[in-house]
Length: 321
Image (cartoon, rainbow, N blue to C red; front, side, top):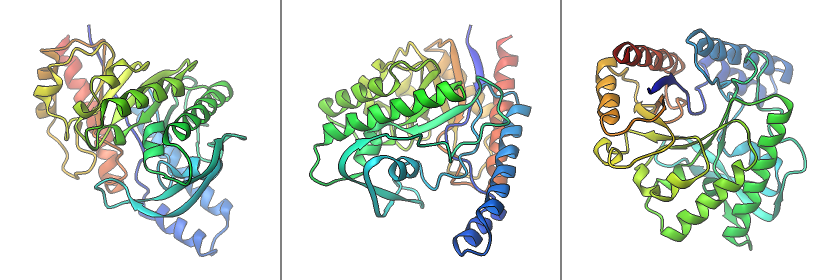
């Protein structure tokens, strides 16, 4: 029998208060301690919201992350940061990593970026870019793509293992928009698959790939063979009738709730979509997710979508009983 769980897939939006606090800190009007006090308070709110709704895996909101690549770009050896680039077709930008030497991890990357104090053991969810996305969005100066790709994979693997050993993990998610943004050639997809497998090798936590901002079939069939436990789909970009054609022997994340639209979806509408998928496939686990991070929405709308995911799960569980 299929079990259903609500699940978030990335960065949560900052409140207006936190945005103003960051601006005040950047202008040196407040101290780092004052900034951290507001950050901690909002992280606690986001964690409590998920725990109150009985989310299996819980993110801390990722409120310190200016973009998905930044902590890695700032902390890994062999990388500098230069200039802003648009984050796919969104009105957000990321600072472009520039690969200038061999990429190595010499210290904990994320210790300053994650907040886990209020998350029960075994329920913390870590979100990172997949190695192919990080490498594809970087500028390579005199380096071969495949060499950098696997250096990033090994560095991410070391970081995940370090976090798992120190604080524990429930789930680690690799966000992989570059695998679906456009159709890649078979060699690139095979290389991306191998890099993902290298990245998650030896990790005990549940492992998930998430595919936002594009048609998931752009990554098929290679993504289906990765050594992960679950694959999450952006169902605002992937056609349900196409996805139904594939037998997936992993957990499935169905992102029918639009992470880039303030409209609060109708529970019955999403339930029917999920049921239509289940008519063709019977995964053991279905995660009901947003299509992407919720950072593109106002904080109050994002919080409502967190609650919406749980209402959809409740409806599905009621129907399945």
